[in-house]
View 1 (cartoon, rainbow, N blue to C red):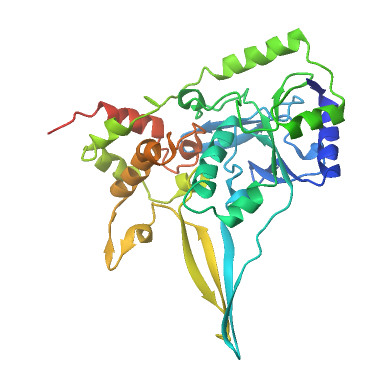
View 2 (cartoon, rainbow, N blue to C red):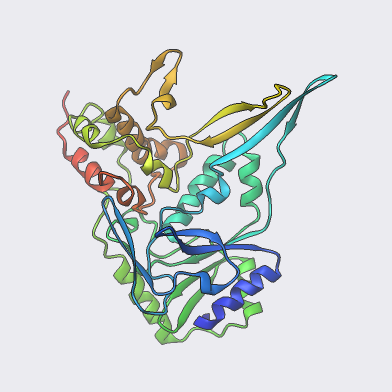
Length: 363
């Protein structure tokens, strides 16, 4: 189907009419982030971006496109796996201690502009939070009400490598509608029953052959990316090099700041703690994001298992590119490139993985 450019507001209006709270990309504090939107005028019209190791900048390009960028520092993860949330509350009364679970969140949420790398990350988050021993009720409540309007990536950044992970630049699953932005509007693909209903409600016309060819050409250009991982399954290569000298070299550059895990759309490390009231009669049990780059993440009974940046970087990379295969059936990296752009010292996961795979194996 084809959606004229002015029809983007009609799509938002239809989603709101159906009871969805809409979030989409907006420019805030020099970056593109997801926020609540009701008007298509809030989308980043004419905005492009420059990304490189340790660098992220926006610029005005003077065209009418609203999705002429690859990604910002924030995917959909904060909207489903909250950076901080209360799990339960305790209150002391005359009858003793009373524990009350926090109410599960849940409202129909429609996200517009999710990229294929983030849809692949959503699949991995689903595996972790929904398909394990016990589903996480807070994630499940948010996820069950989610409608996804994906946007195929026609303007990859220099840091992107989704083509090498098999997760882009075109979306193949996990969406209700997928848009490809062309000069005069959007090519629209419906994948779910909800997406088909939306297309019908908008009264969209079938796409023309020229528009389909423009879509295919744009995605073919986007697949020619500057960076790539040396393979999709690096388990054996990494396992054989756990004592490689290169871990120490990258550890000397790594600040162990956790930026890479904060912007990664698949990382799910967290910690839990209790916050007591000043009257000592009530407290809250809180869950918040954590990172395997912090010293306390591997602290047990007076011992920090990973005491330095080299061991923490090894933990992160081997888990992300190696042991995720055993847990979730694939790599934990979807090629979004955020960890490259938002690393203060410009460490590049594609370069580090390639260097490690070339290291000699001893013993």
